[in-house]
Length: 489
Ligand SMILES: Nc1ncnc2c1ncn2[C@@H]1O[C@H](COP(=O)(O)OP(=O)(O)OP(=O)(O)O)[C@@H](O)[C@H]1O
Image (cartoon, rainbow, N blue to C red; front, side, top):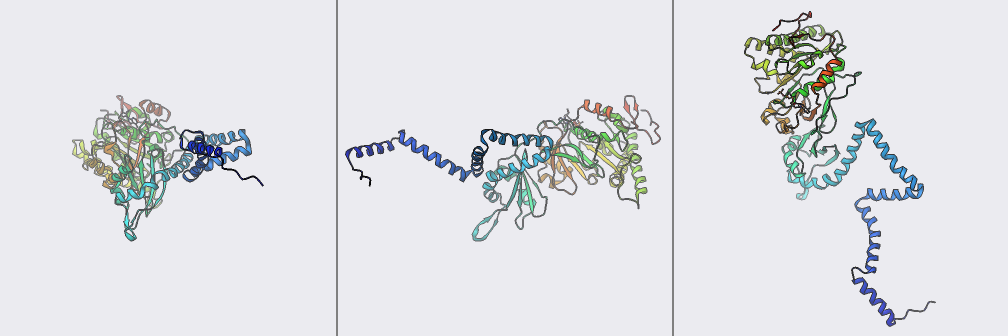
């Protein structure tokens, strides 16, 4: 049996010194105790606040005890190398997974925490029992490089328009520049919070895959989510509006470039109308099977009228056989490129020609899709008198425009309310715009690739049309169906 400690004056002195030390902040005892507390509390705090970090730390310790230092380094390096290889081999799928992982993190850190208060502040909650405000459920977040797509389940009685109305307030509440509203499926809405802008730098022209040109999915640019944008041109007509220097040229040449590998075989033919006397299209004249790039309006009107004749003739043959013509080298996909539509439909003085071209254009627009004749038209001025047949273009693109009302003229009021603010596109971003495709009320923000004059010349050399339009006096004029040249100006 151990002797009982005696309470001597020495013991009392030691105890008093210990207490004194405890009161002194910098004493050794205080520092030891602090260290001990830190060592025990930190893992507990990590476990509580950052369970993933805690789990990773435990795993690292476990791995170290099992495989040693060398094995641990290998375990850390291998996934990094694997990720880099994945990104290089399949960038799209790698980015999809990364976006989901980032999204989960941002959901926890930002949206889950602030959503109930923001929804209430923006008037998007409904009254529940006992006076409680019920916020719409957050389904999930996908974090793209420059936008968070937040999916929300609509409450009974709500519609996507309610969120479109509150888009500005939501943007301010979350401190972002813009919120756009998309409804992909009934009962839910996706709020796209811009977190940056991947479209600020020009995008170089696409590398071409000469083996596979899909006329229904032409790669022409990138969206603000960082995805490749594929334009459907076959069985569609596309109208692009933009003020001067908005980059209509890049929309035109990005599309031509995506078509180019199919041009030499003749399965697609470009017919060009350039009222600016050849300024826009003549540089790539070898790509065009027919080109009216003359100052003479009659040639251009005749080309559009020929397209209408082709449509009528094909439609007659197709009737009863098939509902859609599949392009072949004998019966190609014809793309009628009209650079400044307003000149033909509105500005020219000759009322007879104006009437003729409007009539022919309406035939092509209303019947040409099934006959594989598509119109790719560009305008500076979107007023109704200029583009009377706007409703016949299933795909509309608004590049930089002057006012919100011009955007509404091109894309409609609904698209503007859903965030297609083409009037706010900065001058420094030519080639940026909003696409609206019939059947999908959500505008997509994109930037077309920048195809330089040298790129166009190289492309025309590499992919000339089987029978390019002939040159005349430095410009090219329309040829008739027998290959004879039209009148020389
Ligand atoms: N996608 C793009 N990326 C970067 N720069 C571009 C892009 N598109 C056009 N640009 C630049 O912006 C300027 C204006 O472009 P573009 O000539 O295509 O405009 P536009 O709308 O056709 O003008 P206009 O109606 O006067 O012919 C050009 O100097 C061009 O180099």
